[in-house]
Length: 363
Ligand SMILES: Cc1ncc(COP(=O)(O)O)c(C=O)c1O
View (tube, rainbow, N blue to C red):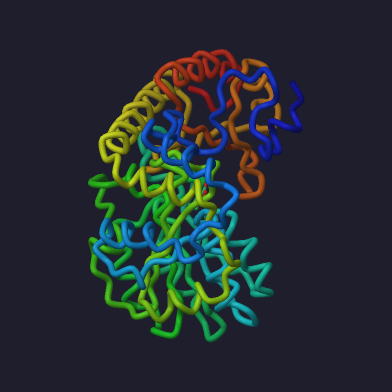
């Protein structure tokens, strides 16, 4: 077990790791119907996929109560974010909250745009787990200027799980100039529905003419390895982004898997329910250990260590548990742990009891 591979997080847990809780994946896997559909598509793998992903875009449109020309599909939502930001941001700036999903920063750099962050609140205090790293709409609005081309919000956010509630999101979008592209990244929305005032863009019916939503099949649908996500927005904007994309960007097995997963609503419901139960169990377990954490609305928790995370992550790895370090987010004393299966959650909590015993923030 090497600490570097665990700490860099790029390749998941080293060989021998029992539990991988480092990448916010679904621990429950895709549904059998999805595996069957993707396997059938592999058998026809000598054929190019449908470049326009027509069947899938129709199904997503029906699912989202949109029209197919308001839907683009891409190589994960990360691919769509890169493309949308590359289209709009060059020469200007991309504005987001501090400690947002790292791809926004990469996309801004790729677009030769300035990356601007609005500060977020302090870490959580014991008993105030839901309020760690709070996001303040005014702090973001203060940083809008003539160079701002894109405002991008992960809601809930990664790696803190923090969210803007419906009122805050509506206020923010309402006060952004119509020339700005507003991207709301709802990668984790299924795990946030109905909790603590969370509302999706579509539930709010936001009127801004350049607001787009990105969603993914990687999280609640458990297709992270197949790389497929989608973008919803006004048809003219969607066309602009889609015109520039790499042709045949979504493989046939990915299209087939995504289509089948939209149809398997029972599997989705079971995954979401299992994730929420696991999140609660992890939160209860950490509370019992006296370890501060942010109890966000994603499929993960963000743990406060009060000491350098490196050796702690190494100690978890020695117990066979892969967790994510957060130094790229300037969070050197925190780690992120994804919700696993019930068994994996217990393995994590047993390891946490041993590993965090010596950590200063405890108690
Ligand atoms: C907020 C957020 N958006 C998007 C993604 C990327 O998902 P995808 O696998 O669709 O590229 C992630 C993945 O961790 C994420 O945390």
